[in-house]
Amino acid sequence: MSRRLSWVASAQDEATDFPLDNLPLCVFRRAGSVQAWRIGAGIGTQILDLRAAVTAGLLDPLSAALIEACSQPSLNALFALGTDAVGALRSRLQDLLAEQAPDTNKTAGCLLAQAEVEHTVPAQVGDYTDFLSSYHHAYNVGMMLRPNDPVLPNFHTIPIAYHGRSSSLLVSGEPVYRPRGVQRVAHGSNDTRFGPTARLDLEVELGAFIGPGNRRGHAIPVDEAGAQVVGLCVLNDWSARDIQSWETQPLGPFLGKNFATTLSPWVVCTQALAPYRTEPAPRRPEAPALDAYLQPAGEHWTYEIHLETRLSTQAMRERGLPAVVVSRSLFSRDSVWTFAQMVAHHTVNGCNLRPGDLLGSGTLSGPDVGSEGCMLELTRAGSKPLQLPSGEERRFLEDGDEVSITAFCERPGLPRIGFGRCVARVEQAP
Image (cartoon, rainbow, N blue to C red; front, side, top):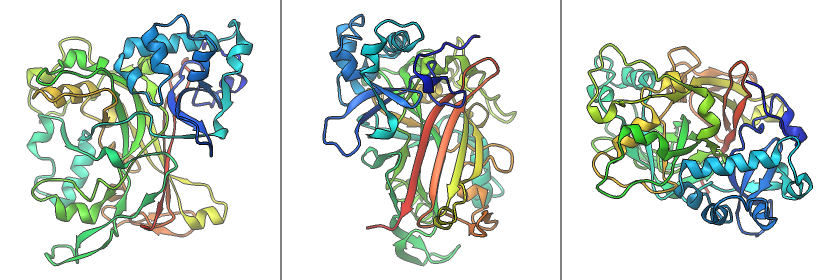
């Protein structure tokens, strides 16, 4: 497959996250300004301002509804139009940005450097749901808690999830404040203390944004559910493990999870990911047959997306040491559920999803050392701390630590498709 080229020079860099084949969407404004947020598309090191493109008449061939959605301060209206509309927009933008395109001077007037902007969360997320989809994550954590029965039977039958807090969704670059809560004084003790978490953790995930959604009471069939996902982002579902372990019996995550979830600012459209589709991970031998609502009758696929997690400490940055890779995950290998199955399960009881709702994949952990998707697993609950180039060690995250998660797709003969960075630094609570 030949790579389609762009007249934007930085989009030709083989290492760019944003070649012409990608064009991820974001919501931005000039850094330090008070102008209204606007939708943009990433191309190389630039952003194409879609509101400016509308004003310039560059999007006139599109439908009136699509043009109106491109003028909004969030992606919700665009997502509500569905994947076909997003695909039509992406095709038009590719025509404008491709080599030999007409009106390049007019299009160039709608570009600005990514270094000159600031981002916000791409959509106004009404509801956020986080899943448990990695067998290895479930097994590793289960061995710490229930060594005789590490993976509970329901894991193999349904996509397990909890409802998160949309108000604390953060865009990449915003600080994460160390949460306070009630924790055990010591392992195995029922005595508690209140204070800052001592076990702050990261979780490597992908996020999926929902398109049109469904009416309440009407489930989305699994064969139609994939079309409800309009795009993916990188997600870090921060966790306070000591607060979490005390409060999760009997109901589940609350203060140990709801204080922060960081998103990359870029939404990679599913059309850009189509060349990287692959078969889902095989079900394990002990897994029973799926209920019919989770078993697609037609084509069933997931995406081959690589994720890398880097950690830097305050001391490392002061000494000029680069961030160190602590984890590498692979979505197609490390998730036993596809986003289509998650959508089908989420709605099978009649629950209604709405445009801009967000689903988290759950922590993506693989079978090998260094493929674990959280510090709890990487350090075996702190018993085997990470050794860092600065001579420091980490059992869990400390103040000043910065976590950066990136994701990308690549295959021989295909362009590299990147997701940008999902980054945040830990600070003391104000």
